[in-house]
Amino acid sequence: MVWLPWGSSEKKDGPPKTADGAFEAPNRTNRAKCYAARDAFFDCLDANNILDSIGDKQSVLAANKACGKLNEEFEKNCAHSWVEYFKKQRIVNFQKEQTIKKIEAEGGEIFAPGAPTKR
Amino acid sequence: MAPPCSCLPGALNALKATPLRSARQWATPSARRTFASSQAFVLRTQLRNPIPVNAIKSRASILEYHAPGNGVRNIGQQSQRPFSNSTSRWKLKTIEQVRARNKGGPFNLTAAVLFVASGAGLWAYFSYEKERMARQRIAEQTKGVGRPKVGGPFDLIDHNGHQFTHEDMHGKYALVYFGFTHCPDICPDELDKMADMIDKVKERCGNVILPVMITCDPARDTPAVLKEYLKEFHPDIVGLTGTYENVKAVCKAYRVYFSTPPNVKPGQDYLVDHSIYFYLMDPEGDFVEAIGRNFTSEQAAKVISDHIKDWKGPLNKKDYWA
Image 1: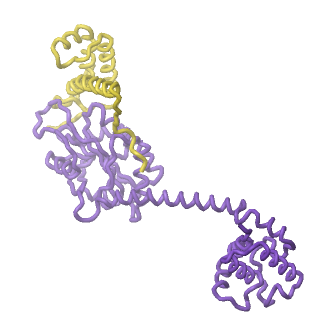
Image 2 (image 1 turned 135 degrees about the vertical axis):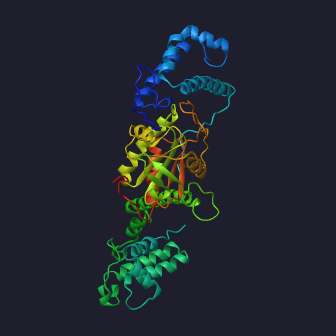
Image 3 (image 1 turned 180 degrees about the vertical axis):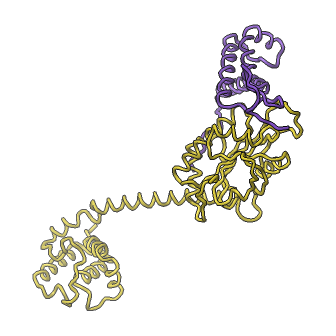
């Protein structure tokens, strides 16, 4: 079967699918669209003080209630795996921030791998 | 303490003016030796036994005595060679003049400037050498026997559908990156950085770098997909794909972890976890250094350019696609 990633039918919204049904490798424009939709959805979650939009059922319901439309937009513009990835990443990032804050509050220091040392 | 140092600047001046010659004369005192140098010789022996002030005075009177006589100055007329441009000691008439001249000791502006300049020069040279040696150590760690090897032979297909093996990277420094086109956020950022690095290195070292992206996701990343994807980043980047087995082998050779499932159904949507490093390979195909995400493009370009400048062997400056 010949796989023509760019010859596939362009849908009105969302990342185009290839002949075999997978999402085409997103180009710069598509990625920008996806990031924008993600940021809009996450801003809405922030405003409603919701962190989890994928794991905990109650939170997912709350997220859909508060930001359902933006969530739809997000899922339309990003591949399903990306949506999942970003939603999980949001939780991980939050936990990381909390841990860093906690350590700093206790007077510890964080040695994150920053810029390489002069060699 | 008595002022004994009248001899030192004179000897220094003599040495500064003609170091080689005077050194030779120290070694073989002969009739060719001029008055000035023999005087310095005498004074030097005096310095070994510190002399009291009255001795200096008497020496000054000797100077006075000798000075007017032209014949005394030079033992042999043919050896009339000035040792320095400064006022000769025998022209100084009194002990006050000698003292005034020697008051500053060997320290004057010229000496200070020379001292600081040579110090700065040495410091710059040694810090440069230290950096170069550190780079060389990194570059040579992977050469030779019994070292952990990164990289090695592979057999893949480039984004134009042609065969591409490890031999195609020889002659150029290769910058190898592993990724996949469906990568959500990190790979595009890293590829943008890679493009920046390529431009900076090319600007500094010429067309000696071959950037390569090897996909970890051969099922979805066909040559055509890679071509479309990579042209948005940099025209020089060569996209490589191949069979699942070949890709797995090259990932193993480069110690790259990846989590691509071996049998994916058409249309399946998934992400691939993989290590994020740029691998710099030298023109002989040996691993030089891994560049992590914590490097900015500027820092990475510096590391790469420095390694390229250290390279003594032949470099292929032709365009890959030419």
